[in-house]
Image (cartoon, rainbow, N blue to C red; front, side):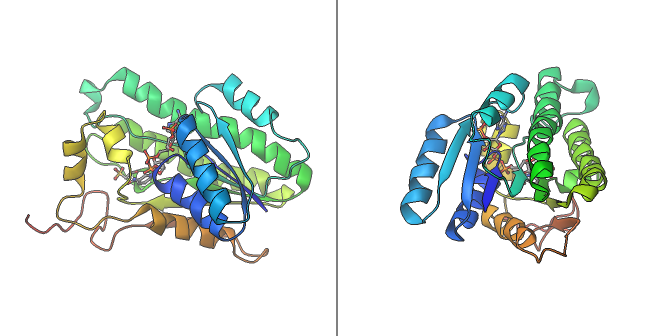
Length: 251
Ligand code: NDP
Ligand code: 8X3
């Protein structure tokens, strides 16, 4: 079995690659940071009997995405695609929004996911089977103050998840969304342009999910029996009830 994980250089994607490798799945891991991809490939191939292929590309750039997938052995069958690469940039009201942030989020979370999905879905159609697992967010289920464009991109992922499931149904391709609440990864550091102190405050006084918690969920949905599809999961820390309802201890 061969699994593609986009955004495997960090956080949820890295943990997802690790759990699939631990269970004997071959992998194609993607991201922009070539050194991290090479390091993860070495680590996974050393510790598990799996083959790992790295594809280094910026998911926002269609020619790079196409060239990366064209470089693969075209006879290789892709069984599972985990559409994980994504980001939030900034946390501002719409009126104060940074247009570069908006474009980064829309180009990565929506257009990038579409570029990869079209290529891989067509390969899966040829193989008459497959499973696409989209990483959405609680931000795709509700909207919170200053989350405007990030929430819009994850609402788009929610809609695409449902649309793909319908379009790919005749081709024996399962489609699932896993929608996390707060997970401590590089997400908030990226959101706040590298401001680690501000990122830390997001999780102060509460126990967030770990990337492994989401990876285990992704692995579980990917390993249900052939006749079972999990359509949609929302998973949050026990101390979180919605995007903004979080119990925190005073520090
Ligand atoms: P991280 O920042 O730790 O990881 C993000 C991954 O996405 C990295 O591997 C990064 O790789 C990749 N990525 C980002 N931009 C691009 C790009 N332009 N081209 C290629 N790859 C890219 O964050 P998380 O692990 O937390 O995020 C993973 C997913 O989970 C995202 O879709 C996020 O929206 C979602 N999510 C996260 C939550 C959280 O609280 N952490 C909650 C809900 C959803 P590189 O930089 O090497 O390109
Ligand atoms: C990440 C979770 O609440 O920061 O998708 O939007 S949140």
